[in-house]
Image (cartoon, rainbow, N blue to C red; front, side):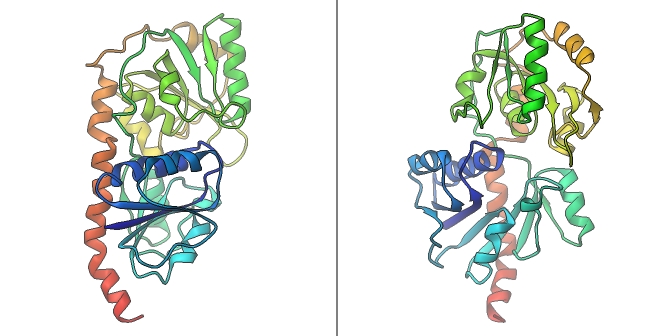
Amino acid sequence: MKILITLHDLAQYGGVQSWVWTMAHELGEHHQVDVFCHVGGPMSKEIQQLGTGYLYEKDLPPDNYDLILVNHNTTARFFIDYDAVSIYTQHGPTHEVEQYQGNCDGVVGVSEEVCAVLKGRGHTPTYILNPINLNRFFGWGQGEGILNLCKSKTAQEQVDQVLNELEVPHTNLHYDTNPTFEVEDLMRQHQIVIGYGRCIYEGLALGMDCFIYGTRLPGPEIVADGWVTEENIDTLIKKNCSGRTKKSPADLDELKLEMIFRPKPSQTPTSWQRKWAEANVDSETQSMKYLDLYEQLLPLQARRAEYA
């Protein structure tokens, strides 16, 4: 099978870019997988090194694919007339470039929150959680410090301030100021990850303790869902571990207390975090869900081609 994955840009090590790398890596085990983007960048090299297919930057690929996995509405319109099954993945509920505009054969929402938005607009989404490469995000480090992965610079500065005041060993990592693709290597050197979204799933895959904190609302407000536990994880994933579940306003005194009474190191091969990741976000399983959806959509695509 020939598969094309599209997105707006590869200019940073962001969540959608990591999703594309993960899906290309997984599907590329058995299929040719090409990638198209409008703007290249640091992630272009990582995609090319996979060796699964071609990377098209700006130039449109030929119309000879079986399946097109579309991310970002800035790319969807270029492939409307392609003779392939197209599946759009919407990654967030409000970000303008991520909103589905109804021009694909099927649509996926990465959270129940996103699926609710899509249903409210008259679509019938399939719910598929973010895929995580569990062979890449595997192992347990010996570190006891904290990895600060807050994407909001304001939130990252707040966490940094609190951890400095408490003299807690930590590392700040931001995709603008010190971008790093091999984030799993840094994760293994720490006990706790602070951030939101995809990095929480990656942390869970490594058996880490995770704290959700950052800006993930329309507007600049910093919110927190707090510690991810075996009891609340199924609730937190409904809104993609985004901080929008509790929407607790950022409070530095409260953040300081949470860090003072943070969990003790507990990463083990039998931790609940790793087991949850294996059961819910394994990229092998998640990518197969897209191929299953492809099979379901084939009759629809055939009818569309017949009446084109």
